[in-house]
Length: 166
Image: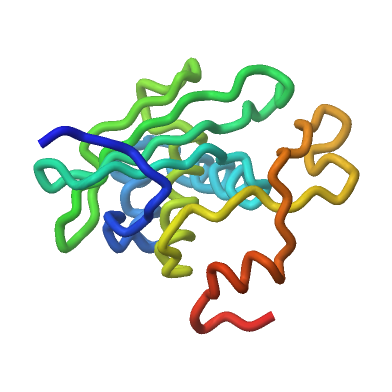
């Protein structure tokens, strides 16, 4: 079967935040530093262009771009990770374009957190970028606002999140 990518999240395995900690602990010798920095990047919305593949050989590939931690005006890193859709979610392969990307780097940890977040919210598709407020979200080195703008109210009408209330 040929692998293809889309914004649909329906093929994601049930990755939880506890799984992120277990996976990072298994693949990194600096678990606490990776978890801390990866979570920081996740909270600051470094991940974008998130895509998920169909299931091929019981694996789902997640790919995305991640802003650089120190140089947000430069080309973002390219990330790719194969998640094994078993009873306990695992990672079989991963890649990041950063210098440390041959191992499980901060950017890949951020991708795991983003994936767990989408799963926990039970979203069916990747949400669009948040609406701009006129100022950049990343300080003076921030990126320009995306051309597609959507308010929280409009987003919630199109993609209601069960169990969450504002």
